Amino acid sequence: KNIINKKTVSLVELLTGGDDYQLLFTSNSANRKKIYKLCKDFKVKITRIGKIDNSKTLNFEDYNHNIINKNYIHNI
Image 1: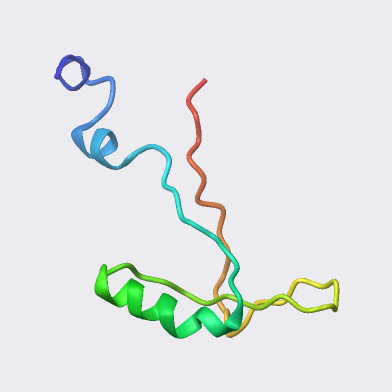
Image 2 (image 1 turned 90 degrees about the vertical axis):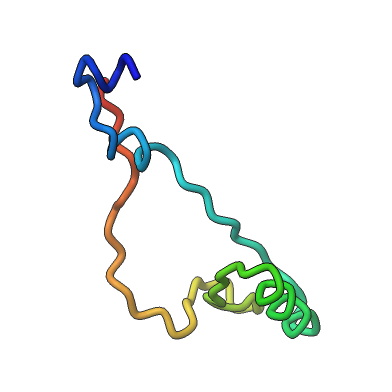
């Protein structure tokens, strides 16, 4: 309340600023249906972004988005 009253940060910044976390994990493809069911049951959005193979390259599956740096910028 004091921070908002002193106009150090706005209410929007206070409620939306900071770190956001997402979980990135790998799993055997045999577990795919179980994972999708759990996500549906718990209403968790999940996106499959690729697979692990022996190619030693990084390839994203059906991921055609512009990647923009949206990291939090610390006011130092």
